[in-house]
Image (tube, rainbow, N blue to C red):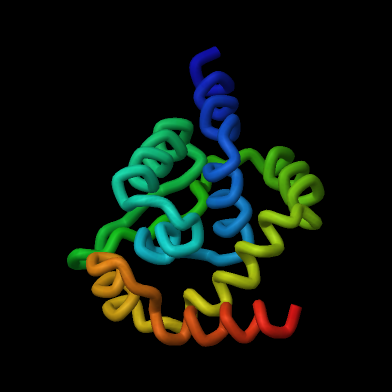
Length: 135
């Protein structure tokens, strides 16, 4: 009974659902990309990722100072299909999808450095501001 409860807890928060949706569309994302996408503090994102890992929904790997996240091989396929259908047209997920295009265009070193000093990645700023002008 512990595993279903862990999964329910992992999915019971909107930001964690946004992470799952992003990882369903991208094989792997680094912590700094998730921080940028969610617009949250690194410690908060780290806590969300710990909960998702405890539920065995995501896995992480370290490469030097980088931490990369991906969906776990144990992620239930029926749950994946249901979430894909349920979240695909979500306005929040669509906004994340658009923002990730800009975020992925940023150099990860630049993105991480800018997060430490509280500024945006140049590519992210340009693409997001262009999108805002076109809406």
